[in-house]
Amino acid sequence: MFRRCQMRWMPLCCGLLLILAAPAAAGQKTITLYLDGARVEQELAAQKGYLECPLPQSYTPGSLRVKPLAGASVLRVELVPAEADRRRAQEISRLEERISELQDRLQALSRQEEIFSAAVKLQSGKAPRKSKANPDPVSSLARGTEFALAQLESVYRGKRRCRKSLETLEQELARARKGAVVARVWLSSDKARLSYTVGGTRWVPSYAFRWAGDATGELVLHAKLPPAEKGALYAVSPGTLAQGQPSRSVRGEFPVLSRNALTLSGTATGPNPPVSFAFAGTAGDLPPGEAAAYWRGEYLGSGRFAGGGAGEFSLIP
Image (cartoon, rainbow, N blue to C red; front, side, top):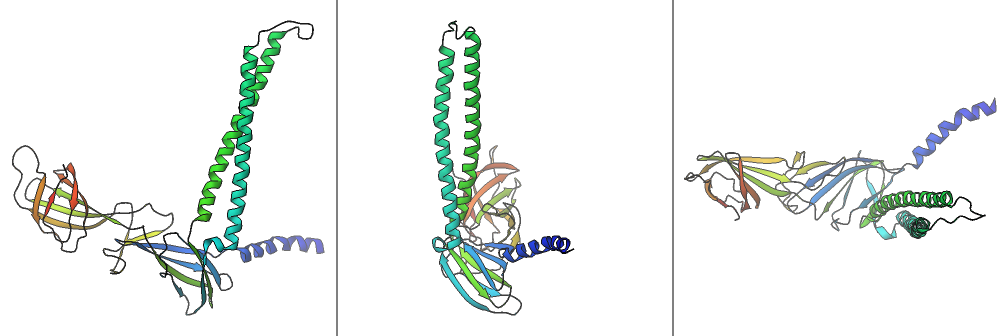
């Protein structure tokens, strides 16, 4: 009876242990892109009032903010250099050791490849000689060659598996080393919202001048976004981090931020479309950026648009 009860309780106990050992759960991450950087916001769940959050290499020192949720308070925050984080250092050491082992294994396999390649050449270059000890030299040579080739194929498979494992481990090591500091947070609750700014990640203004072929046209402002992080939501603010202008949610790699109807000063004459344009109707707060021109749907080329209410644009020859 006791044994049956013990067996029933085992799965429940294992489940409780897994829950207690689980790391801080990450909530939805939002990345707001500015012209000169980005702000990252994320809700994190704490285990027994404690959580850790690795901050990336591009983290701006002094920009971390920690806001407790559910009316609680932040008790303590520590920023520890990534290399001083014990658990991360152990993981990096483990990965480095495993990579060294695989590199040694790869060298050994390369040496075996040389040996068996030489054996194949030796077997194929032998002249069959009949003797009492070797009454069928042709068959013997064939068996020797087949054996050497089989060993060589095994070495090739081993090298392929070894290289694949090395590539995986090197990616894991790069992820483990990623980050400048680790934020350690103690709370009087079980959840907090962390935010910080980063440099090097921003949106880039990209314009499209679309002319109908007469005096009318449209200026479309796109946001060229950096490679998306899986699971993250993105927003774009028209100004800089210091300006802190309101942002809007965006989707895709090249979202449209605004459209301005334009009036072209003068229309094209002759069979060829123009290479420079003078116009009116642009907004005065547009940032400078790269631009492309389209004439009746045809792509003409690109150039630099000055933004800020500028009324002219020329293609780069």
